[in-house]
Amino acid sequence: MSKAQFRILMLVTVISGLVGGALVSWLFPGRAAFAQGGTQKVVTAQKFRLVDSQGRGRAALWVDEERGPGLVLYDATGKERVRLDNGPGPSPGLTLRDATGEVQLLLFLGRAGQPTLNMGGIGRAAASLSIYDQPILSMRDSAWKERVLLGLRKDDTPGMILWDADGKVCGRL
Picture 1 (tube, rainbow, N blue to C red):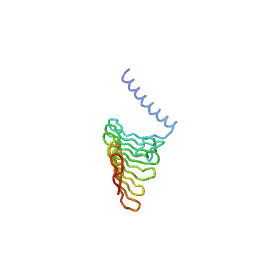
Picture 2 (cartoon, rainbow, N blue to C red):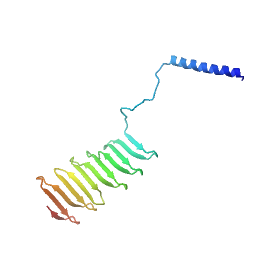
Picture 3 (cartoon, rainbow, N blue to C red):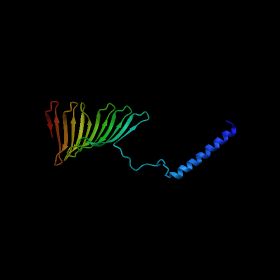
Picture 4 (cartoon, rainbow, N blue to C red):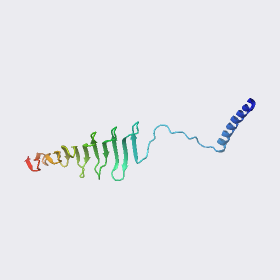
């Protein structure tokens, strides 16, 4: 192919491209599609999972048919550290776990709707603070036996019960 033939071929290619593009636009008019800028007002999903730069799960937000919505935060090793969910039944709760995965703090509403804060857990000493009609502080030993119960009576006088290691009452106020 000579230089003249090459130039004619290039000119015909450019002109046919322009004419073809114009003809298609005239025959098939439509709207251009552009990526949406800004933020969307609503995103609908049943679960979201956030990952770090290495692809490890660090957080999850979901809706479960039985328990309702929930949120979990994971540490860098993938262990659950924080959970916020509706819990079983009508009892929303917040759970905090240590680096080994053991529950250290649990804040929830009991069956009667009373707020309860549990510190520690099964297998080690723990304390619970609940509010039924009056506030109650309960302390348990590492065998999860109740040892001390402090509270206010309905007449607002303080009350206390102490148990020994065998579970027998050894003091009362």
